[in-house]
Amino acid sequence: MLLDAHSGFRYLVLLLGIAVIGYAAYGMATGRPYDNRMRILASSFTASLDLTLLAGLAVVLTGTFYPQLAGHIVMMVLAVAVAHIVSVVVRKRPLEERTYAPHLVSALVVLGLVVFGIMAIGRPIVG
Ligand code: HEM
Image 1 (cartoon, rainbow, N blue to C red):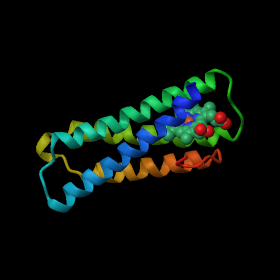
Image 2 (image 1 turned 180 degrees about the vertical axis):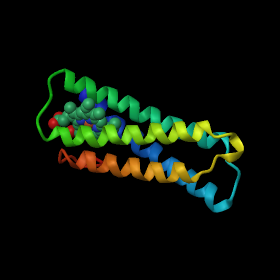
Image 3 (image 1 turned 60 degrees about the horizontal axis):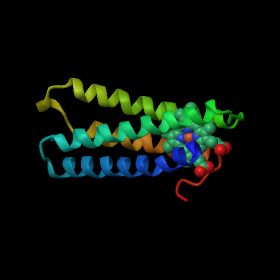
């Protein structure tokens, strides 16, 4: 059940990641001022990564581990760290100095790490 949950959460991560990229790209292309929806989307993306990480940790604690899994775990922990660091850096800026670009770049990096992390254990990204 934990593995099913962990596996299923990937879709939440992928969907929210794509939503962050789309919204940030739209904001940059139109030159709109930074808004609250961007902050909420980025926080939801980070929360979905945290949830998936917790479920993954629980799967490991219930006894699933083999050397190939180390690549998966390292990539995913890096992805979660990047999402958190960028989120904190943006939040520390005054509202009028916040921009969409860090969200766009970090979501691309995070999704790249997630894709490689899934491939590291030979599983399909979708399906
Ligand atoms: C946070 C982003 C993460 C994502 C998106 C992710 C995604 C996935 C996916 C798609 C699978 C394959 C599930 C399947 O076969 O149906 C998987 C398996 C697994 N993941 Fe993660 N994972 C993440 C982080 C982690 C972390 C941080 C850990 C451990 C601390 C972990 C531990 C595992 C384990 C133990 C498996 C089972 C491998 C197996 O059955 O052979 N994952 N993960």
